[in-house]
Every structure is written in C-alpha cells, then in structure tokens.
Image 1: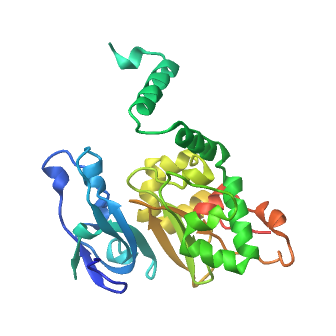
Image 2: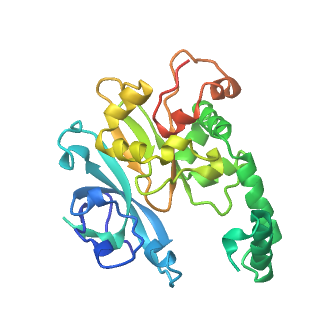
Length: 94
Length: 193
C-alpha cells in the first residue's frame, strides 16, 4: 500500500503549485527538490490539500523523512537533521 | 447581515446550535472536547514525562503510540491529531517547530507559548537552530549530540521526551514532574535538577 519503506532514498518534488492558483500545501518550501531518507511510514491521512477546500479527500500515505541540514544550508552543523512529515505524492525515488 | 458585527457569544451559540441540529457534532462530543482543552497544560505533559522516566514499560508504549499510552493516565485526546513522542538521548536532541503554521500538541499541553507562533522562531528553528537555542535560551547541546529539528507540518502533533537529569536517582514521579517546563517539552531547553 505504501510505496516507500524505511531507508529508501527519496526526493521531494520540485513543484510549486502555489504559482498556479489558490492551494493548501503541507510541504515546506525549503525542502522542494531536496533529497532525504524515509525514517518510517506514519500511516494514512485524508489529503489536506483537498480537505482545505471541502473536496472529497482520499486517504494517502504520510512518511517521516530525514534530511541532512547542511545539504540545504551549508552553514548548519554537519550531522544535524530535519525530520519532516511528507505525503507520498510529494516524494519520488532518488 | 454582517456576521462580524454580531456579538461573539450570540454567534457562537448560533453556530453551535446549527452544528448540533445538522448532526455534525453531538452534545457529548462537544463536552468531551471542552473538558480535554480545559485540562490541557504543560503540567500534564510533565506528568507524562515523569511517568516515562520511572516506568520503562510506559516509556516504550509512549514512544510507540503517544495517544494510546496517555489514555493509561486518564488523558483522552479525543478528536485531536495523533500524539507522537520523540526521545532525547546522549546522541540525539530534538527541537519541535511548525514552520508552516503553529502545530503543537494542544490537546495535551494547552495553547503554545506566544513566541512559538512567531515568524522569527519558526524561520530560525530551521535556518540557524543551534544559534537560536544558544542565544535565545542559553541551551548548549553536549559535544557529540546531533540536533534533529522536527518540522511539524502535517497530521501528527509532536512532543519531546527529554533526558532524565542526573542527580535525580530515587526521585518519585511527582518530584520529577516538578522539574519539567513547557520549553523542555519542545526541546528549546533541557531540564536540570
């Protein structure tokens, strides 16, 4: 049911739907296009991008994904991490 | 009619009445939700942490499923997003932020501190987290401890299980709970005895 497993290398889609019109997105800007590693699946939740507009919201897999801080901001301390909840449709295999 | 000009208590009563009439919520669910929010406070979070420090089985259950574990303590987070708990140890320290808005385990801890919702805290927690901890809170992580910033963006609400301070051997849960501040529960500070 879930496409990714713990340890899988993933990339957050470099996608900017907010440029096209009104949206509700739970994927932070600073992670778009960045590579991380799946820590674990967090279950399935109704897609907030639909819920926010009162549309039918199918449940979709959510993952905890780890990113190296210095891969995004080189000044941050090597070894430090971000751990962020990302929905499956925002992830692609890296 | 301009809704913004109606006194808020009348607006609330009208809205509440409509939700009940249309069967969107029940009286019992509203009462339960109100009781949960009235009881929510950092002191409750401190009790949960102190129990985890003194009961190994509870600690494991709390890390596996926060919402279910706190039910053992009579805390029912009904209607709230799932509670996730992340554990600090010698190798790894967690800092909680919500860069998108202000996600916080309100059903357990109550309303977040005002600065938690500020753009300054939210931006710096990812852009310069060690500088933020050091300069705003005087929090220095021990050498060799990695910092993991948990950006709470979606459907969980995250709380930190801090390390039990040294010098507290033999303390009971009530005394331990007295050490824990709201800031310890999101990792901007570290409890000490």
